[in-house]
Length: 115
Image 1: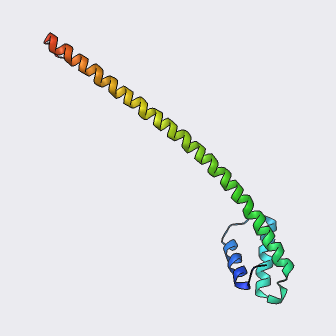
Image 2 (image 1 turned 30 degrees about the vertical axis):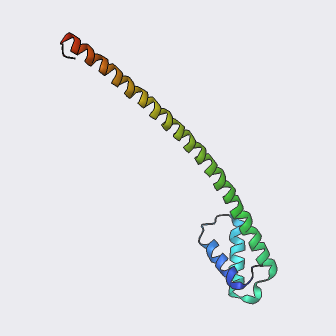
Image 3 (image 1 turned 180 degrees about the horizontal axis):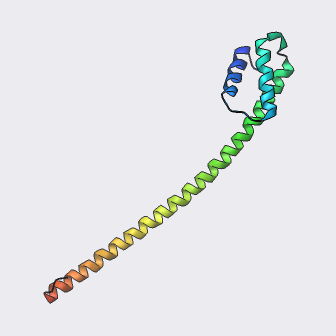
């Protein structure tokens, strides 16, 4: 159980800010909210069940978010590799243009013909 009722109240308020659709946590939330309104109804078993449900619910979301983050990081790495490769390819194309342009300019000077 939390160190004090205010810590529990703060947690209950934070959980209430989420749109919880899962039935078990919604019920535990209602039970603990009712218990906090009527202090004598808030038994240790209600608090323990609530904390267990909150932990279970948010642990699942954390795992899902971490999996998603790994996927996004992997995709960013792929995009960065493509960007690096395209930048290198662009550099090669620019050098080719510069080399061929200088050759054409030199030929134009030798033949006194416009390029």
